[in-house]
Every structure is written in C-alpha cells, then in structure tokens.
Image (cartoon, rainbow, N blue to C red; front, side, top):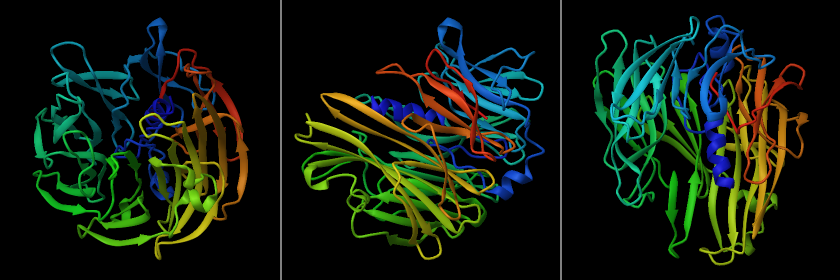
Length: 475
C-alpha cells in the first residue's frame, strides 16, 4: 500500500510551472527566484489548472480553478485528461501539451491546449500500446519533444530501447531524432540553458529490469540527435538491484539540476555520496562521500543491526536559488526476518541534510521526521514532509504533516497538519501560494484533498474536497 501511495504521490506532485521547459518523474523542483520572477507577467496568476474526477466515471478532466479558493472558474468546459500526468507547458505558460492514452487502434494523441482561450487541438502520435513521457517544449514553443520505447519485454511488460521524438507545431513534421543506447532507461530529462542540448539521467537495465552497471548521463544535440557524451556516474545506481544473497534493493537517487551553471547534483544512498556532473564539459567534476555511517545509524531512527535487508532508499534533493546549498531529505525502507516473507516491514523518514556545494560538506541538519523537500519560488523557505509506516501482519501509517522552514537559518517557522499524511502538490504561478495534498482516507481508500497554504503568513486557506479519490495539480 505504501508503494502505491508513493507512486501516486509522485504523479500528484509533478509540477510544470509556466516558466519551466522540462519535466521530471519525481516531485519537480521549483525554479530559482530570478527565473520565476522574470516570467511572472507571462503566467496567468488568476488561473490554476487541476485535473479532477469528472462525474461518476471518475475519469480525470482538466479545469481552471481560482488559485485562492480552488473553486471552478465559470464559463469553462472541462477537458478530458484521463489519468495522464505526462504534460508540459511552453515557456510563456500559454500552451499546455499532454498525451492522452487511447483505447482505439488509431493510437495515442497529443493534445495542445491554448490556456488563455481554452481551445484544444489534437494530433495523432502513434501506437496506443507503448508508454511515452518526459515531454518538453523548445524555448520558442514551436517544437514538442518526448521519449518513448520501441519495445516492451514479454516477461515483465517493461518498456525498452527508447527514442527521442519531436513534433513541429509549425511545419507539422514528426519523427525520431535520436535513439538512446540499448537497455538504457531514462530517469530524468532536462533541456539545457543553451536550448540546443538535452541531458538525460538514466540507468542501463537487464531483461529482468535490474540495474546493470553505473547510472549515466547522456548529452544529446537537439538539432541532429547526436549523442555528444555518455557520462558514467561511478558507483551510482538508479533503480532495483540484488546483493550477493539475492535480496532485492531499490535506490531512488536525489537529483538537482543547476541549469544556469550547467551542473547536475546526484545524491545516492549506496553509500551516502554526492556526484557533481559538469554538463558543459560532459564529465564528472567531483564526487564526495558525505559520512562514514548511514543516515539511519546517525539519526538513531532505525536499528540497523536488527534488519537483515535494506530494500529501499528514496532521496529528495533541491538547490538553493543561488546554487550554493543542496538540501537533501530521504527515507529508508527495511525488513526484518526472511526476505521473501518478512516479519516486519517499515518505512522511516530520515530528516534533512544541507550540503555546501563548493566544498561538498555538510553544513546543517534538521532531525525532523521528513523524507521530501522543496524550495519555495522566492528561494526563502523550504517545505518538508514525510510519513512513517510499519507492517507486522497489518500496517499502520503515521503522517508527519508539512513543515515550513527558513531556507537560510533552518529555523522551523510553522508545522502544519501534524499527524496527517500530507504532501506538496505545487505552487501558484505568482509564487504566493503552495498547494498541499492531505490524505483523509482510511485503509485502502485514498482521498487526497487539496489545500491552499499562504506562504507569506504560513496559514492554511481553502480546501477542495476530492470525494472520488485524487486529482492532479497541473499548474
């Protein structure tokens, strides 16, 4: 159940602000304050987009809502969104593109929405059986790019052998511009500041979908699809793997892109380490171990000696607006007893660590029960959240609410929804509000209500009840 909630929370937290050009599959990092401010007049501060259940069918439909009250704006017909979270905005925030999977033999469709005029246009893109994602627009909004696999494995039904495709909105040309290395699975995609290159963090995998070798970063020219560099990250794994005893582990590294400075920071948990990639030079610039013992041992939150396996490490990372600090939160999942039928399974949030990017040394720490972190658009505050889970036959879960923390001093400003399972969904286009998801369900029924947080006052505002389960924050 926890893994289902984790996967769904990732989908809910996919934020594509109007000034953003890329899309990531984990909760998106807000843009630095300067970038957000530069595009404020281009975004629509009077309109927020949510994809919410429509009628009794529960199918998601896109609709504009008031960013303060979350009430539907009058005069707009909802646009069918299905359960798709694969979407992107042009830099000016005026056009939304998303892929809506179809059950017909004609294939999947790209939908372009003129956000201001609320007009929708559709383009057929291909076969409906395969997955496609990581959408992003060119800087001028004339071209849409995405990744899709060319095959799906028979044994596990997993996508394989990805290609980079594009669709020109002006000339209406569509085609493959690059083929990724065989068995390379993309994890995160980021267009670079020059607008001419794309960086892809990914992992080579076996036919059984197990990580093979080190994670890599690919640098691809968007003009002709040439792969300029394949950069291995020594010792870094992104995905599932097995130890010598045949026990499964999973690592989700923390990833932070410093696009203005052409740098990538990857924090992994095997062991705790920071890898810095120079995207301009196409090489690993630095790599440093953070400490000799693991986060759980240091914080005293997990009895490592009692655990026979540590199957999961999930890391969340974001950069300060000036790029001088790296904020890292994490959670650990462990089992006790036989690996295939454990007596105990638990998930534990491990707190926040702050790393100086110049020295790659720890400069701060908060021992709070948090596992994920995001920076507010003005760069002044951090939002932190997490949950604890323990299963001994049946499972119990404790949410730890949302912490609002001063990013410079790490002083806790307010603790919201204590004891509740909450997560950040995104920010308003003008950066004044944060939107929180609060799980109000019981057992296997998940009702993620949307709540407004005024970042200036630290107070909760309007609530939008989602009676049929959950919705997507889109922008």
